[in-house]
Length: 192
Image (cartoon, rainbow, N blue to C red; front, side):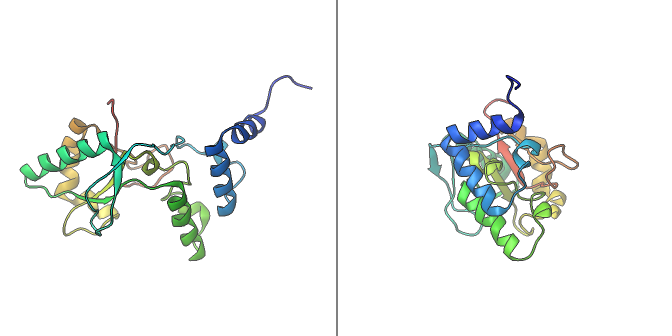
């Protein structure tokens, strides 16, 4: 018998010893994710923070939350964009594990293919929205959460300026993470 654990044994041990990972494993089973999803996933594991603050309502009037640091940076960035004549809208911010699970489950109930869904929605535990630092951004006159956002002045402004506020485009075209191009999805990084 080998004294080294294989990857599956390590994952099983970690899952049993960590309540967050146990919950994650249960959500993945409910969605029917393949057993090798965790081992094959190219996205980082994202834990939910305990210190979220209420933000402005999103473009749909729904309450949103972010970490205090990300919210402060968002307000500064939005204000700077407005000074340049660019109107940025908050479309989505923090999403918990259960919300992410239901988002995918709803698409599965619609008959969509799981593999295709996972190219546009990260599985629970792997969405940057769980961190309270990721935001989806829109602008008036543009359909939200569509690639056409890349053709707007708002996106051009973000490309040129978001880094000053420590926001990065998470899923550029042909990214190595296996997620579809999302010009609207930006994540705050405390160190850039």
